[in-house]
Image (tube, rainbow, N blue to C red; front, side):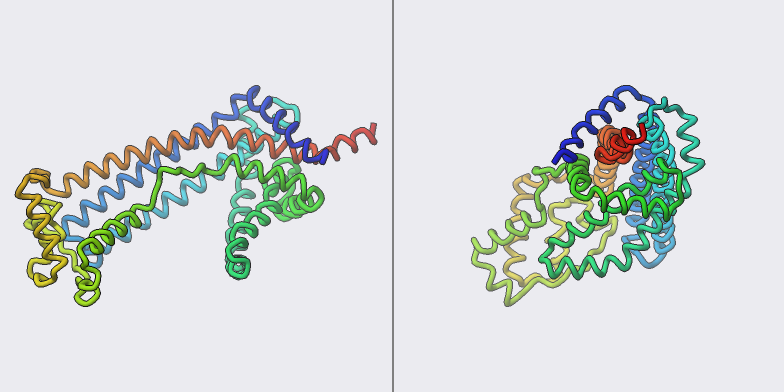
Length: 357
């Protein structure tokens, strides 16, 4: 119980170190800028790809096959580059954490020392972890099924408990990849209960917050259609005479560019005119058009999609920057906390020092 209470002392020490070492945020701010730039680049790529597809009538396998492949390769390059930059910043930042926790004053020289000594070790750790999850994935699925889903949460958490100190041991102990793995596992075994409680607090506070405002829009749409059909007693008619799958065709001359509100019903004019449900929907929508309840001057649809894409790119870019800045505060604080815990070892380090003295 005393070891569990020590966790709050370690959080207090990490908070004080955080306040007194603002330089720890410099590498994080650099990474936020790079991450935001990559998100912006992905958004621009998506917009360019959309324009290419609209020009060719959404032909994915014809002239656009090369464009699709190039866009996919560019996206993979962006993801790989972002991952490499994150390891670059992580290696230098961990060395700064270690310097501060062990009583020193961190500077950018410590950052570059960490990059030089630990960057490739951190890359190796992540690659080994990803490769290990390939066979572990089958075990995870099996355990998850027999435990009715509980294993999908429990197994990854237990793996995180035994591997959380891997990179910290590389930095603090100055050892190799596999020796630091053994150190991390030994640490978790020796201090399993207080250490697990500590990680539960860290994961609970640093995980993304769920947003109650996000609902299941697809479910809402399905419910609305179901209510309409039930209200008009059309369910049996639909089961006996269903609407076939639609082969979407986009062209500059289609009614889609004139009135998006009628793009659905206009596509069935020659496909399935005798369907009663379709006829009711078409009549209702055309009546709304005659009464000016549907917009008639939207212009070409692709222009509005462009506006939506630009707004979406802007929101995603700003959202990434803001969320990354907030995450940065937690990353620095909990990073320092991990090094404090590893240094003190839940009171064992203090007891050893007293015996030596």
